[in-house]
Length: 512
Image (cartoon, rainbow, N blue to C red):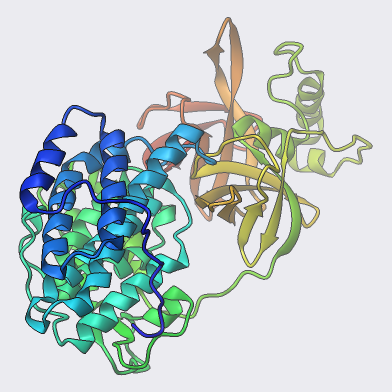
C-alpha cells in the first residue's frame, strides 16, 4: 500500500452517532426519505466516520450498519442512470455521482482502518473494501462513465494488503449479499478485474447484468498467480496490461481465466444442444441465440492474443441514424422535406432501367456532396472521441453511423460508448465493407400524418446476405421483405444477429 496515498479524509463533518444503538436510531429516522436523499445522508456519515477518531472495531461496526442500509436501495438508484443517453442529464448525473461516491468512500473508510485492526480481524474490512470498490466500478459500467484510475489503484491496494496479510483467499461471510455465499477477498477482486477485461461498455443494458451475475457465481474459481504466463497460455490476464500501469512487485500480477473460459464453452455447448438460458442461470431476457452470441463474445475478450491496433487517425464528420446514413451512401434524401416524390430517385430508376445498376454507379456526375447534419469527431487508434460541448446531441450505443472515410462513403456501428467526467465522449467505430448497399423497403411506414420510406442496407457475405433496418421497422422473422433500390428485390429475415438502439441487423435468406 506504500505506493498509493489514500485520499485525505474529511474532518469537517461530525458523526451523527457514536455507537450501534444511536446509529440504529439515526437510520430509523431516514426510513421515509427518498432513496437518493438517504444515500446522500449515508455518504455524509461515511465520510464523517472516516475522518473521526473512533476505535477501529467500533468504526467497522458503524460502517457495517451504514452499508446494510445502502444495499437494498442500490437497485432503485441504478435504474436512474443505467445506460441513459450521453452526456447524462443533470439529474441522472447527480444520482450517479452520489451512488458511486458512497461506495468509493465506504471502501476507502474500510481500507484506512485495516492497519489499526489486529491481524486476525483484517479480513472483514478488506473484504468489505473490495466489495465497495467493485460496486463503485460497476456503477461506472452501468452509467457508461469512464472509470477513474483511482478505483483501479484502490482495488490493487486491497490486493496488496490481503497478500501482505496472507488472507487473500480467506472465506468471509457477507450477510448483506446472502445470495453470493461465503467468499474470499480474491473473489471480489477477480470479479472486478474480470468485468474490466470484457470491455463492459460494449455490452447493452440487457447484457451487462447477465454478465455480472455469471461472473459473481464464477468469481471463486479464478486464481491470482505470480509467474509470467507460458507462451502457450491463452487465458492468463496480465493485470498491469489491463490497468495500464505498473504494479507493486510483491503482489500477484496475473489472473488465471481458464476456469471461466471453460464455463463459457460449457454453456455455449448446452445452449446449442437446446438448453434454455434460464435453465443455465442466464436469466429470461436473452434468447438462446442471443445468449450464445454473448458468451462467444465474452470468450473472445478473454482469449489472450495480440490485438491489431487500428492505424486510422484524423478528423471525421459522423452522421447518426438510418436516414442520414442513407443520405451519405446515396447522396440523396430518402424522404425529402418537400414530400415523398424524389426526382433524383426517379431519374436513378430510369437510368437503372436503361443502363443497369453497375453502369449507373459509373456514370459521370457533377452532383455535389449532399450536406447532412453531422458531428465532428477525432479518430485515433480505432477509437473516436467527441470533445465536450462539440455537440448538443445525446447518444445511445450501439447505434448506426455513416461518414466519408478516405474518400469513400462508409456505413458502420458505434459501440463501447462512454463519457468522462468532463463530458467528452469516446467510442469504438467498426465499418462494414464497401459493398454495403443503401435502399429501402418497398412498403411505406406511417410517421405522424405522413407515409415515409423505410431505409434498408444490404450486406453481402459471399453467398449469404444480411439486412440492416431501423429498430422500429416492424420486420418479422420468416416474413418476406420486398426491397427497392437494392440489387435484390426480396429477402426473408431468418435471425436477429445484432440489436442496436436504433437498428436491427438481420441474417436473411433468398426466397426460393
